[in-house]
Amino acid sequence: MQVLFKITRQPENSPAKIQTYTLDVDPANTILDCLNQIKWEQDGSLAFRKNCRNTICGSCAMRINGRSALACKENVGSELARFQQISDLGIPEITIAPMGNMPVIKDLVVDMRSFWDHLEAVDPYVSTNARQVPEREFLQTPEERSRLDQTGNCILCGACYSECNAREVNPDFVGPHALAKAYRMVADDRDDQVEERLEKYHQGTQGVWGCTRCFYCNTVCPMDVAPLDQISKIKQEILDRKDNQASRSIRHRKVLIDLVKEGGWIDERKFGLQVVGNYFRDLKGLLSLAPLGLRMLVRGKFPLVFEPSEGALEVRSLINAVQALDSQSSSSQSIKSED
Image 1: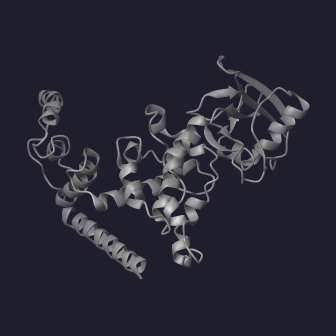
Image 2 (image 1 turned 45 degrees about the vertical axis):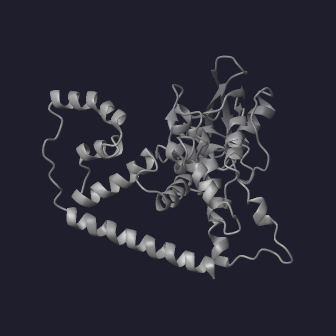
């Protein structure tokens, strides 16, 4: 079958352009097979990264039909079935572009220095003191080791980083790949710097509170690492250790849960006063709410009366049940760690 490949070509510091190649391919051919065919038979100047060809190294990550993926994993047939575009010539199209959030070096090759720098910023290795184990090896139970399996599957391809909305607007945010690796260290019982790590991941918006929870990282991850899930686990570890006065980020999460628990949904009047105004302790925060409050009043959008939802009791019981289960799970893990 014939397929048009529309590839974004871009020399460094130059405008991008779209170049089209027509290939005779089999639906089972991978996108990497097709790129190789273009490079070997039509245009030797096309630049892209590749190595293992077997979903192991992560080198060939790029945007395929608008989302980041591994060229060696995706094939023509699945791409056309997922998102088929038909050209003016009546031939199906596949679009290929470089990953996002990283500057282009050439064509589909991007500069990944920020990706590696942000990974290094979370100290993604077991602490030095924990590695100095005398006389015997550091043994783990199967259960302790299993807690590292999902995050250990990360091949550092950069797909999640490429699609991260938070990274796009906040260059200080370390990214979902780094925080997924960070949780691996938090979950590793051999590490003796968990408290220091959590304090570091809690600061500002470069850590877990910079995540906008857009879910794209989970969607594009080729290894099912689910970076957003790992970020949420770090948040929960922090929340278990902090009270409302620790930071606005902590208050935001705790107040949200308390208000939903109280009324079934969020009373926005209390939410602003308790989170931004810090229960009337933060005068500057309270004053910052004034312009928004006045605009809402003028437009009739400020609720003078809050009516709890009909299912408030059910919502409250569900939250209580989940919190009780979390508490039991934390207690059992603590007991096992002491044993």
